[in-house]
Image (cartoon, rainbow, N blue to C red; front, side, top):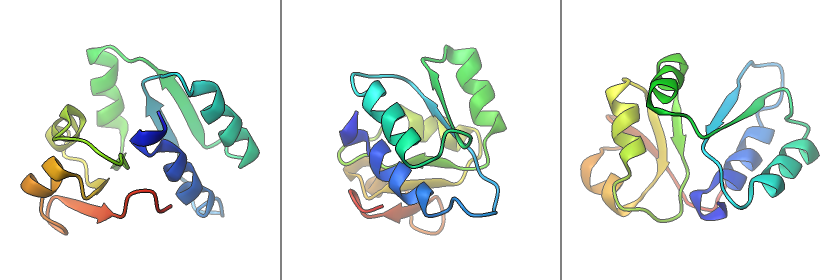
Length: 119
């Protein structure tokens, strides 16, 4: 869903589409999945973005273990479980200055905060 900031994330990643290797795995699905797929195509990121859809707990744990970084660019949240899951996996976290996240995470220690809606 757009308010999760995933379209903003695509805009940011499109700026990194040079020679440095990176790959985005998006877990979950929602009503804007086709629009998201279209945006991936329009930005030419088909080879760098995988839409995994819903992942059960064991597959999600594998995804966390295989990641180098966790990005959660949501515009508005409490303290989402996914942040705790990423912390449990030992991942560096990039997120917006969410109410709950800002209450529990410190810039430069637990997370890198980015402005919402600003790729």
